[in-house]
Image 1 (tube, helix red, strand yellow):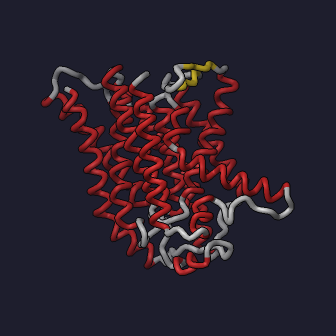
Image 2 (tube, rainbow, N blue to C red):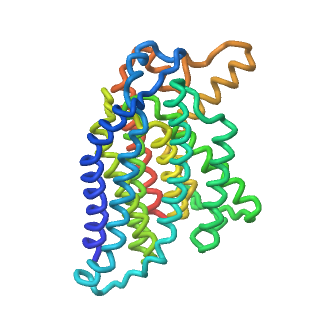
Length: 352
């Protein structure tokens, strides 16, 4: 039986990889025809200016790959299972609520990102939606997501710390706004990380792989069918990002844009809630955390000291660029850090 469920996760990965790799070239061609080239801020590293014609909104390819493969797997799973693994009966599709909720959150945030990208392309400036507009829309999506998950009993107001064997119980009145803040923070942290070719996509590839493992492990322990759906969704995201990196790793042929980055941030958050371990987002998303903290520290120190800086430039990946490290060196280092922290987190989930 275990091999069957592992095969399902592998099938979701391979299907998503194939779909994304297949549609990728045509999406890039379409974006170029529509003249959806990105704009680069003048205050960034000067060598980034040559990237101004790289099309943005390439996130459409892994959004499409993730959604199509997940839907195909979930629709076919009961039928395949009845023939290959009749000892286990899957719940009907109404029980895949957590998967639909996560996809709903991700699509809402992806739509916010698309509106931002569209305004940038239309105005030919690196200015899309205002910060307030994006935050209000993201907060609304986060609150609705949490309320849906609560309504269907898919989350609890217990914050579990896997490594410490400690659980904090919060009243719902505190849990909902706190976790909405966590979601919005994570969504924007992933967006902030998307500053180098292959950085956000590759880091999230390993994060998605972790969630596929964690969801599958928890499913095998509890037999809660929605966790199998979460495992399939995580594997699909992982596979689609693996194919996306063919086009996005340095030198990039396409950027994911805010369309893709906000979708990824919401997916990562949603998967943390789908396994009811949102606190695990801190270690598995350590690169997102570092990137965000570097930006906060830089801005705060700049204001307090009236113009002094901690880093040569923030977020921190630009600091390392200005220190002389190549994009590939910085990106690979981020991958290695993510792999280590995802492995530690996998051990923490195993010990629960």
